Length: 90
Image (tube, rainbow, N blue to C red; front, side, top):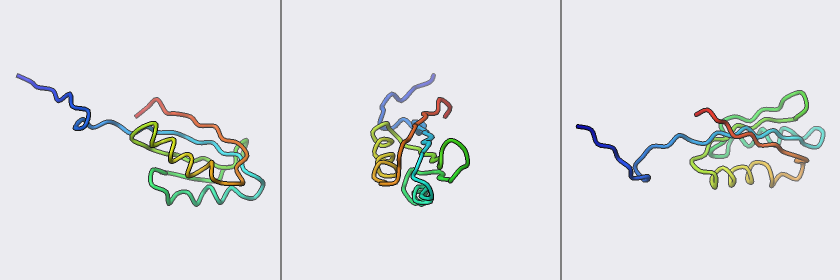
């Protein structure tokens, strides 16, 4: 006989992973890279190409993800544009 726990508080869910592509004012992408210190940020790198930085974030909920993105990106005065990609893979 098997039983299943349906209580959402005790079930372990996988985190939501997002890739935030960031365009900054020239020479300012290092400000985004410093966001590595923020809880939930798994990776933050300057890159060459269409975007200036890529930030990988993991969060337990969409609300938490939104808060982290706001803290990492939207409070930065040198951010021009972002594009957020939500991963379909766990």
